[in-house]
Image (tube, rainbow, N blue to C red; front, side, top):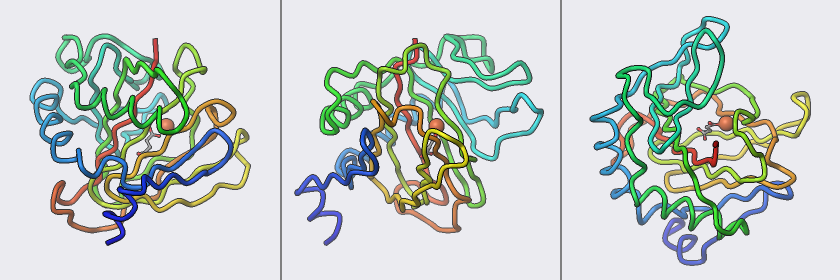
Length: 213
Ligand code: SIN
Ligand code: FE2
């Protein structure tokens, strides 16, 4: 009942000024998004990137859109080319773009034009430590983050790393949008719990949309 009711109501929960959780916003479109993701993966498969410090990330990643987020020993950056195959990243599927634009508008950020979609895959145990998204050229644009598959706990902190974080349980179809005064807030994902989801199997998939260039 919960998903149905809340999807119909379009439940929008404020997190902090500039950040909202759109409960179940992507539920109806999830099968289409996951289908379109398969085509992206056929060109640019999952990979575990290396941090500048030399650690392998527990989250597997790929990208679509004109720009892709990349991490290696030299640092973090956006690149037009997938370093794994030397080719441009796959185009952003129209279903992805439409969802990102609909969610940003629902959160009060009109005319979002994402040029980058980072796709994250969390298997049980994978986590993303508290960080800021600051590799984008202009922080005036919001971030749209879509959760698919297994649930996770999202940490949403403040501008300072030491600020207290809120813990938000995210379920399949939930979308978090942050921008404006919250654009540079710290955030992260606690280690994923074991589980099995009918659409994704034993993982959580996150699509993070940004205007990076
Ligand atoms: C990210 O911060 O890039 C991803 C957050 C998430 O997986 O929900
Ligand atoms: Fe992030």
